[in-house]
Amino acid sequence: MGKISPVSSKYIINSTIEIEGVVDRPDVIGAIFGQTEGLLGEDLELRELQRSGRIGRIEVNIDTKGGKSIGSIIIPSSLDKAETAIVAAALEIIQRIGPCNAKVKVQNIEDVRVSKRSFVIERAKQLLKQLMDQVMPDSTEIAEEVAYSVRVMEICEYGKDRLPAGPSIDDSDEIIVVEGRADVLNLLKHGFKNVIAMNGTSVPQTVIELSHRKDLVVFVDGDRGGNLIIRDLLNVAEIDFVTCAPDGKEVEELAKKEIHKALRSRITAEQAKLELSNIDTSQSIRKPVITRPPMPASVPSRPMPVMPAPVARSKPVLRDEERRRLGEMLEGLIGTRGAYVLDEKLSVLGKVPFAELNSTLKSLNAGVYAVVFDGVVDSALVEVADKTSIKHIVAMDSKVDPASCRLNIVTAAML
Image (tube, rainbow, N blue to C red):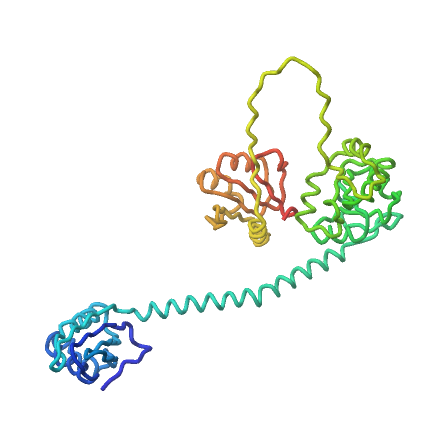
């Protein structure tokens, strides 16, 4: 008798059987063939279907308890949906098996291909996870190691004092002054090339000369020595801005996010002088340079009318995961002059040429969370984006001051 291969079967009929008596498996199979014979016509005759391989071997499992038999009937089928359903329904007309009353109930018709598809999906998930766990970290580590090596190779000696510095000292209008070579290496690692080190506590002549030609930002460690260096620099050089690492930390051990945060919170040299005058440099624990300015003494006066405080419009901020994903997208767009339009889940709503970005944003108006493009942010784009729901603009560079608009403008140097 022909069998259907498990590979070629498309459906499986699962049914239960209850018999009021004790019977054997051959009795059940005989009843199935006997009581359905001639019922469905020649095309759906069970014996012919099994002989041609369109119905597989009928599996019957019987368990006898307390004088009654309970079991299951499993029939594989390669017929189409309708024919399989007809064969399944025909099983339920069986009312007797041998001398005993019986009842057959079809539970379900299982689509074998759905099970196979589910297996494929689950297995694909496992393989993808394995690929990401084993292959991707290696690739990332290699890329990071190469990038770090290139940045370290960029360190050079500058001026007659041969100070450790980045390669962009002469090209930059603003210079970051740090304490030592390790600080320069850390900032180079994170993309800051306009850095120069003092190489000690005394102020080199090279730094003094630079202060007359360029804007200097002093970036010192978060300890007592940092205050002393700031005092010396303010006395002999034309310093423009001052910032420091968090208390107890050194610049050489800061992460990229901490560096950006410190540089954003810098204060002017005049404010630093005022605040340093209130700090006792003999203290072993450094008080932060960046403090709240003292409140003026209260002067008795007639009460002023209470005005409602204006509601501050908070500037949107990227989460670390969003920053990482947007940075990867921007890197992939380099040289394409293209733009990604993204929703709140950072799914790509569309990719358009940069020249068509303004008109695209005008037509979309709502539903856009961020824009990433290979180009420079200008005032025209900001004006269009400000009228939409856009929160973040990520680009290679910007002609617009990020602090002057409600949007969060992020450049490649900030990622």
